[in-house]
Image (cartoon, rainbow, N blue to C red; front, top):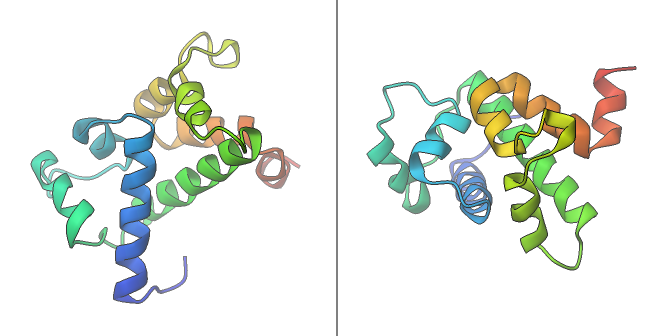
Length: 130
């Protein structure tokens, strides 16, 4: 990921938190999905909504990239009803052994996030699975 200005980094952080909130994730789920270490307390998640940018960590940056990809793919799939993306994320799916995509991402970490993105975004899938 390219180096972002402080302002751009803060804007990206707020955008990601907004996406996760639109999916109905609470602070603990956001913390888990973003793979924060114990250095970032769950109660500290609120600061990311206000005035603090995400730390520059490889795992976190990777997950942020995938979350943006999932968000865009859901917007493409449901362009006229953004609420459908949040519903899809929380609904059990046969492709994921009748687990919801969010449960899969929370339980399997990066692998689960990549599986959900690959399912939604065929261009990404083709790129990683030629």
